Amino acid sequence: MHATPWLLLVAELAGAGYLLYLGIMFIWQAGRQLNAISPDTGDGVKSFWQSFVLGFLTNATNPKATLFFLAVFTTIVSASTPLHIQMLYGGWMCFVNAGWFVLVSLIFASEGMRQRFLLIGHWFDRMMGLLLIVFSVRLFWAAFGIVTVGAE
Image 1: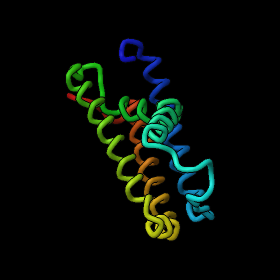
Image 2 (image 1 turned 90 degrees about the vertical axis):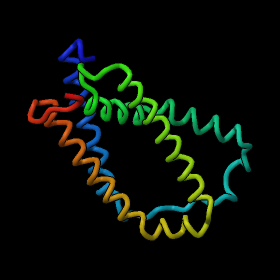
Image 3 (image 1 turned 90 degrees about the horizontal axis):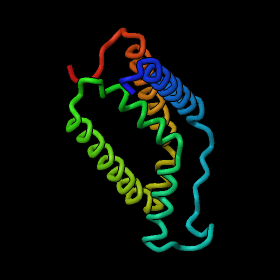
Image 4 (image 1 turned 135 degrees about the horizontal axis):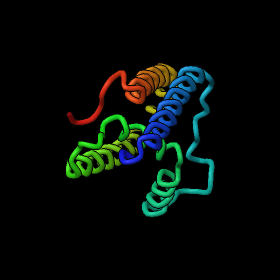
């Protein structure tokens, strides 16, 4: 994308706009009633592999995940970033993403933790919304050359 500057600009602006939208929606929706999902509903208990495949396909085909990673990488990777560093970023993001999903699964497997999160989740949503808005502003600034990004 760095070889086609206008395409990079479009990707940066789309990513920044999307992150801004997500941040605003996180803040706007914070405090709205959350409905706890009961383990007694649904089609029964899934095996490890069924759960893994379902989770993988859900995330891999999620356009929001693709746009999020595109937005993240366009802020930290420049044309001068060496390939091995780009690969390190990609590997690191895969590792962090997998770790996040494992952590969330372990935490929310507890009914007590789910109930506590329902009580304080609105603060988490507000903090994440603010973080996404700050990140989007940084991306807008980078797109218009107000700040520089990537390895210098």
